Image (tube, rainbow, N blue to C red):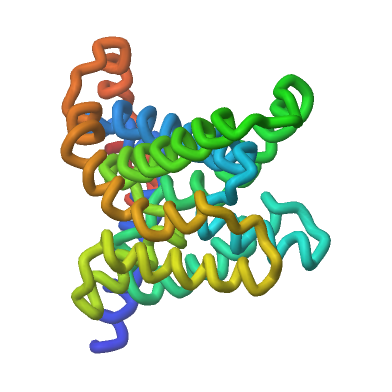
Length: 253
């Protein structure tokens, strides 16, 4: 009897995970289309902010610095390596906090690295390679702010978080450290590893390590929640979509 109940419980959990990963299921929910659209926009903004940060030549965010330094040492694509690292962290997060995993987790894993590479290839063609100090400072400040804003938007969509971002929430839940400070801890660890490997560390990396958590908290209350609460009429018709719910084994929701 216990075995049967356990199998039913596992089936229910799997069904819930599958439903949370089903984009059509999410879009059919109240404000689902809006949350999905803002989540995708935040991923594009995140990749762009990483690329403009890198263009400044003043370092990149700590996790990107970590991935860039290791991928360079191994001689493989940054986008591919970041996806692999995210996959490893995802397994850990799935064990510790399944609630943090949803469709946004997968989009972040696959998308950010390649979006960054796309914009970087454009900069190499159209932007000057001889950068003045004012231009570098503007790009660094813009990169830090937009990266924090994109992370805040992404979190507030409540469609899962990236594996790396989830580490801070896991720490918050298990050792009771507020996210803005647990984020500082993980960023400092990544910065140290990147420094030891000769990665793209600069003043911008240090600034991000210490201030990204607090800036995300600022964006939460002043920008992201307002964006999420706004009404977007052009998305209204998506909310009436009916979908085939695979988690119900053939029933239509």
